[in-house]
Length: 96
Image (tube, rainbow, N blue to C red; front, side):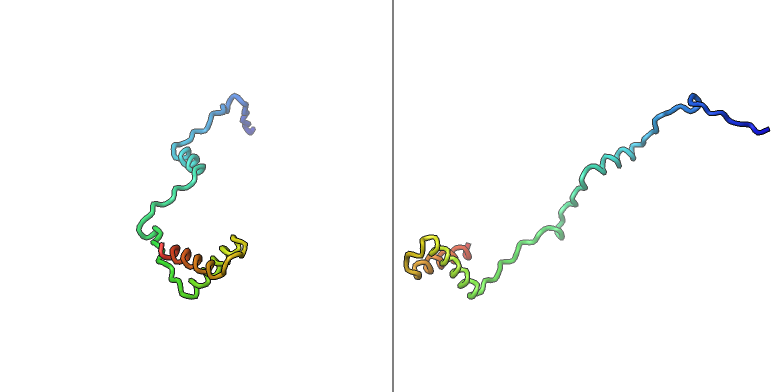
């Protein structure tokens, strides 16, 4: 005759599973954002080399600045006045 095992709820007690420190640490670190790596000499941004402004670029900058100055004042003065003022502002900005 075959023997049968009787299982009752009393035979198997429910015990909480043990967690290890590694599992807890892994679970906690998954919630935190990853740390950024430390900057080294190779990952730091290098100082940008000064941009080379050609004479054509400078003239375009003065044209735009003169237009905005004239617009601001309602185009009421001599255009040469706006040009000279814009030229001073652009040169001051480029030399700064």
